[in-house]
Length: 195
Length: 182
Image 1 (tube, each protein chain N blue to C red):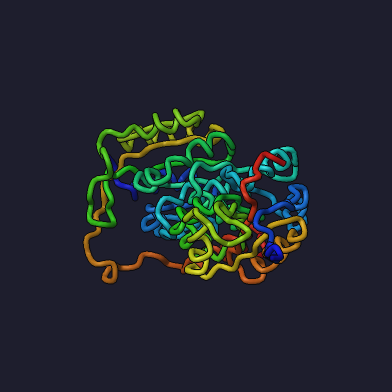
Image 2 (cartoon, rainbow over the protein chains, first blue to last red; image 1 turned 120 degrees about the vertical axis):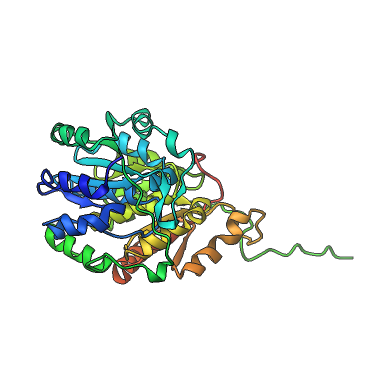
């Protein structure tokens, strides 16, 4: 396992002009990214939807690389997204998934069969042409350039250290630097999309 | 003793007139739909072959209806015009995705919803129909009933409302299980 923030710092060096949906890595990515108008930290509109949202963006913007940092709790809620991605096969879609083996924002309870799910195997079985799994940061760092040089869609499961939150929601410190409306408005302006 | 005349209901008990699939497709294209995010259902399956044959539409198949809302949100955010084609059963299953992704992100998407269980005489035996409009009302979502080809212009009304309000709007496809029997 490795720290999400360390992984994101490594990714940042290769980010280029990708649109990034940071998912549950948003807390760290907000401090790392230097291109916030191409970041889409939408928070948690409804659990299980990050992959669908990022897929929609990728289909809408085929000339832009879309990188998603999904989470295993989200993906388990919507495993059916995997064959949809595989069938449509957007070449610009890069599906990374943070696997901390638990529901960190509700106190760290384990996800079903937490330590024994091979998400890369599931993705490959659903039809992703390329899928990877990393539990050592040095392996991830060494492989990232070649992964990003490949056509999407591809999937990479990343074992990360849980960052468990166990204080009442109302007492948690907000990490967001922009409102959701601002995030979407900034992205639309960046992409030249009119409402 | 004279025979008692049979009273004719002013509303036909069953649905004879049907909705032209080409008209539905024309309405979608007229409103600039680029992607149809869908899961097959009995009431709207007649559209499938036409949509598939149309190069201007990309079909995005999902395996559970809740996925349709996050995908549509991404498509709309990226500048495309999605429509969602699902059944009322799946709509109800999608409650949180509808809330979070479509309403939460203010996505102007039209949901074409197969109205399973709907009948012209209004007495249904299918709870899918019983709860459909109640569900939409709970979310404050406007809906338009489309039963026959004469109703097709209501689809454009739905699209116009979605654009104007930046909210999802539903079109209830009230076909009585004609499905492939067209």
